[in-house]
Length: 264
Length: 271
Figure 1: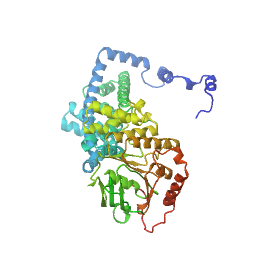
Figure 2 (figure 1 turned 90 degrees about the vertical axis):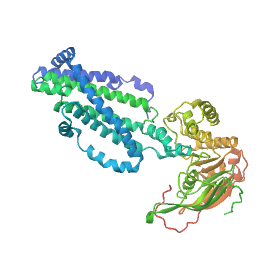
Figure 3 (figure 1 turned 180 degrees about the vertical axis):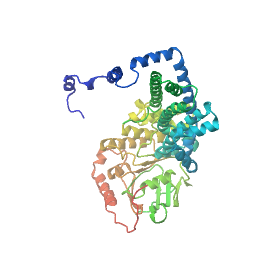
Figure 4 (figure 1 turned 120 degrees about the vertical axis):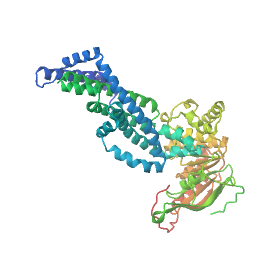
């Protein structure tokens, strides 16, 4: 691959490529803030600058408002997401393992997958009222649909040879299922969980924009009424950071649970 | 073709046929195979692609049904996989989420063997295939040859009287392969089992076997049975001997100079 002796590479003058990624990340971040500051300070756009947003952020944190909003959004996401995944995994396994179950369930899954979960909100509000139920339901739907397909794909793509290997070692279906099918499809399920969490998070904010009395989406919607741009920025940034944190958590879990995988 | 004179065979294929698919697109993978294999015999099976050798093995393993005929193991008809028949696959088929030891203990766990005894048995077979230093390693950290040794230990651990091996060394490089052949024979000498070993390598077939079964394709069928009259343990000296070369030539001719049989078939894929 590398025909050059190691020494000659060292000897080259230090280029950007030699810098640790974290430093480059920080440079990019600082650069972004600087551009933002420059544009707003020059009044090129009517947007709040980083300083205004930072101040508002501190205010919202001190008053406890931000924490309340974050917690109520998170509670909705986690409730809906947990319910969605809890149902998606057994249904996905059922579909992957039994031809009949697949044929019966798949048309519904494929159909509902084509409907954006947000489009269900009006119906959910009419039938379930305006409290937590419709929001949690919509999030449940979003995470269920993305997770069920991944689980089912995982089960049908389990290597036949592994199943045969278990079989010739004396395993019957009820052993093959927990000992082979579940571990072999775990990587797929975790991808489904990750996608499900992403779509749950995207859905909660949108759902709160439409109908809620608390939460990050609700706060933005209120701020919009009062032309309170810094609050909108604080909410957006919180949404981004929380989404990123959750994704990283699932990724870490994924790495732990699938460290046996051969990675290319 | 010599009719086998084995009394009380370990495995007996009796007029075994297998057809895949239905209607016009169906093809005969195996046509009336009859073959007796003695207890403790090492038999290799060679033949061109599509000769039904893997099909025959899968039928013996109980992973594929027969369309006609029957397979007897110790005089009893085969109905699904059984612990007396261990299988080793070309693609190793190790459970990648389990360590070497856990893989070897997989079949023992299913049997419900207590942990202490499991450990004793797995230690023995892991040691037998020379993987003691890798007992706790995951398969992804092993080389191809080591993976296959682990698979051999796993098959041995449940104490089968028959080992069915489907091109087990097919994915290995030539040097590793020769090494593995010696190790397999060494293991087999110490823990004698009846072995059916499928290969497409004529050298390998002759080096390992008591008898080489040559099969023909389209439809898959028995072509010739060539006895290998060479003593065990097989050594490099034997491998390079004139007698080995003679037998090898005979097998080579049987495999590569088969008279084509006129029988139109649509699919040529081997299953």
